[in-house]
Amino acid sequence: MTQKKYSISFSTLLLIAILSAGICFGVVYLLTNIFERQQEARTTVLKVVDIDDNTADPAVWGRNFPLQYDDYLKTADMIQTTYGGSEAIPRTPTDEDPRDLVSRSKLERIPQLKRLWAGYAFSKDYREKRGHAYMLTDQIYTERQKVGQPGTCIHCHASTYVPMKELGEGDIHAGFEKLNALPYMEAKAHVKHPVACIDCHEPETMALRITRPAFMEGIAAFKKSQGVQDYDVNRDATRQEMRSFVCGQCHVEYYFQGDEKRLTYPWTEGLTVDAAYSHFESSGFKDWTHAETGAPMLKAQHPEFELWSQGIHSRAGVACADCHMAYKRVGAMKISDHHIRSPLLNVNAACGTCHKTGDQELIARTENIQARHQKLVKIALDAVIDLIDDINAAKANGVAEDKMKAAQQWQRKATFYVDYVEAENSSGFHAGQEAARILAESIDCSRKGQNALRE
Image (tube, rainbow, N blue to C red; front, side):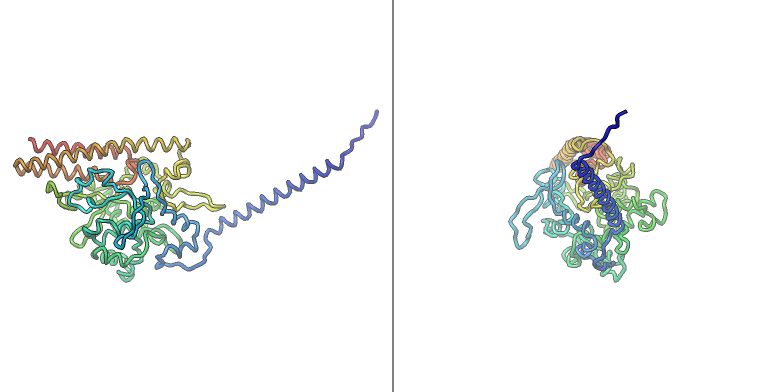
């Protein structure tokens, strides 16, 4: 037998050595990277400054939490979606109003609103919503201030936790009462920032918390209507509930109760529009008297929390923060995105976690719901205007007082119902079927008001 001899060239050996070295380097780099990311994940906070329960300035918190603070600053972005958001409109600053950008006027885009709110401050100025960065500035310089607003308005437009503590000498409930009673321009002197870290987080542990007494009282009243006694939201709510409740401190329907203009949420009978209307009927409350018809009117605010609570996402346990502050990865860390905005501007992270389909398909589904909703809103608004015209004509023709009062009462309800979904930020998406039902009820009320004048 002949023996075969094998030889390996020097170049082959060199190649093998290089490959082996590369593999070793890659393994070491991977293990080192894994170790670094593990350490990074464990060190979620690098304490640079001390913060406590009196640290209102979000920039100070931002030194310990720079990733979240950088996102928070991005709420100054102005991006228009098809049915929401805000487009930046340039304006010439004045001494009276130093803003160089504003959002579009909804009164120009939806002309029915001026007559819907005739005699009320909102008929003077009502604009598209902008991000949290503008929440205080836009309220200070709105034309509605010329009509006059109470200090109560500032609760949803500023960081009020520390000012309430200071006014109440450590008691936020006492401070809440004092802030309510002030005229707006006096209340403004006590606040410095839009909603900030301290309004939602406990500074020692960063745990979510409720700082608004009106929400504490409102959610307790709602729980009582369900048979739950002595509900304390900061004691009894789960963490997932808190991820909606902290938003619900401001994104709600509310009213000013009594001469002291006390901020109150109408939740004694539930979280639906019907429960709110029943609450107002029981108390005999009205926001203003309609300038054209003389009807006792109600103004809905921004009931995102209530309408969300009637929708499929709430039923499935999805919180506000899951969509509007979707989790994201920064290195090894998982954080909530504090660039609070429409999920349609962050659709892959906000929606794609649960809905395994393409981004454009998800956007198309949403806009389909919103397009139908907007069409229904217009029909409902036109129906209320028809009723206002008929009441005015009936007054001119001397229609009996009892018929007039019946028509005015239908106007009150029809207006509140359409306003409830028009003032809400999602353009019907939070609870599409419920929003459609509310608009159908509004249209029905307008037609019943017209019929009341003819009977």
